[in-house]
Amino acid sequence: MWTPLALALAIGWPAALFYRDDALAKTALAAGAGVFAIALLTLGASWALGIAPRARRTVVLHVLLAGAFASLIAPFILTELLSFVADSERGDGGESFTLTMSLSLAPLALVLGLPMVLVSGITFAWVALTRPRPPGDASDDDMIRRSVVQPFR
Image (tube, rainbow, N blue to C red; front, top):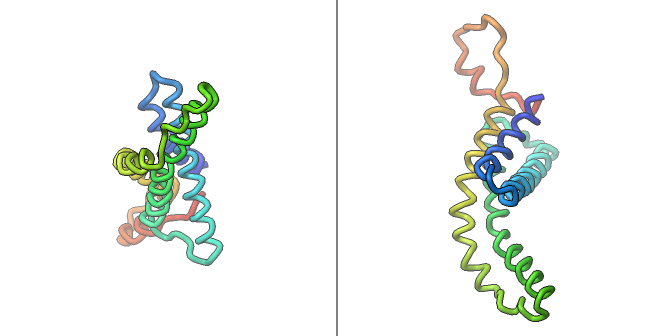
């Protein structure tokens, strides 16, 4: 129950920023879903190798690395799509979109994408990995209990 809620919160909040523009909201949802698909694949692979995430920072690191990868390839995908659209409309208009344009947009994509991915990763890790406390539990080892997170529920 908590993992789907965590995914909805982590992927949905950037789309909520673009509530007036449906195209940008859909793009933010698709990008967020792609980032979390990559992050969950790498988390699953590490889990299969016997390295299960024991801390929230590990999960956030996986999300950040997936977000950095998605931010770096986004300009290349964008220029290819723009080139395809220009070719289909004019015949040879796609030649004006070059590799250097993609390379020049990569730092901007990182600067814009990584803060959003960081907040999404923290949101996901906090909601998905928090162990519920039993009612009336006020023991002395409370700090130890809070530092040990429960894997995805």
